[in-house]
Image 1 (cartoon, one colour):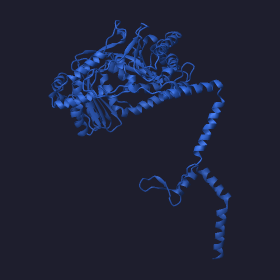
Image 2 (tube, one colour):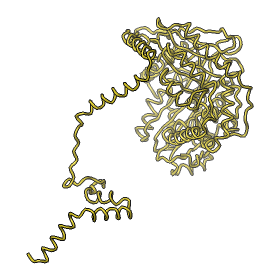
Image 3 (cartoon, rainbow, N blue to C red):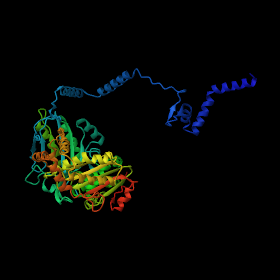
Image 4 (spheres, rainbow, N blue to C red):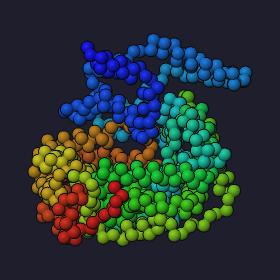
Length: 627
């Protein structure tokens, strides 16, 4: 080799082993470009997958290997022992004795044989049994309609309780705020406890606590002569349009519920008393803003997934009464209200304080308890729950009655919903590629009517034998069906549906189909089996007794409905359908004016149906960027 080649080789070797120069260059490059190191690694060791475009390791340069840490388990055990030793060092002799006592109690409880008879079960019977009678008694020692309903069921030492606070005297202007108000309960400071401490303690003594406003249809008795039912002023009555103006009743309230072991009931009641008696909404505005922001984001993201439910609520709201108030509390109107509240949170704290004082009063509370068996001391359970009533009474007596604030978000919302025209259909544009359609017809066949069972069977027939075939199999929708509820509302629906007005025509044809009796007796029997599968399904222990407590439905009324189901046949279904659906004569009944029933579609905002809806004088419900 030539001398020049040798000099070049020596220079190259010197360059390759000179570290300081390399480091100085790296520092300069990283000062100029902070991502220099990452970019060099990517360029050197990663290449793009030709099919997916993802970055992958160059197999000729990089080999990735993972070796298990053979000392992982030992290290973890050592860390746990060290942690336990540190905790034990902080405990006194009394603490150790208490832990030992609780451990023994737990071991004894786990060793006991559980009674499975309290669990939901299925059985095969050749005869037709009556509905099992519920062992309900009442504690009316207070004499103020704030009764304690006791359902004596075996619960293996668990106490299930549900309290209903009447809100009939809450100003209608503040009613829409109840949803946000109850969502904050348990998530803000209460009494001398922070919201963090409340959460931890709640998880330790019970299965958490739920708070929610509710609108409940009422089918039972009322008045001063029946103390186990609401007073007359706690029930609201309205005439159902398009159903012969038959009267319907409902009540409104806030439901508070939980369950716990009987030995933890005192602690659970103490926590509940703090939350309902002394929640401090203004103690941390930053935390309140975070909670509201989470609620707004969650509600906005759920609109597209729950589009059918929102469309049905909006459509029914035009009927007024309970439907308008339910829309104000849980429908699209509530989502719009949340956005408005997020801009005026500081103004809402006085409203929340007023609602806390107005709603959670002992005279407005009735309670249902499910507990029983040899391991439940009934007297102790009643004494614990009675303490909640006294705790709320003391909390309310410490403060003077508050004045309802004015000028808040949501004022006028309920009245505007009740003033809507029931004959106007609605289209709700959403950023989705499909539609969700809902149609509801008011009928006179509410719970207790001679046709209520036949109409429920008719809805099941239409779902299985007509709507499924035409909406899903032929129309390409994800699903669809029909239902008839206890309030007499006959509904049809489709979801994730590529069609819109075509589906509304299918709904009209389905009504004509059932009125024509285009089905066999065997179809009716299969529909009855499906209906009985729901009304005779095993019932969870916690829900027993909820019928009379929440809706006023007695044992005799439930048995009467069951007897009417057994009397249903093909002829009775056709006769009932003709009486209540026979006016649906045109396939455009849910498209052209005057509309039959109430109609709403939530769907693709880019579809031409938006323009057609406007042209047909439909109402366009624009959520204005809230989705």
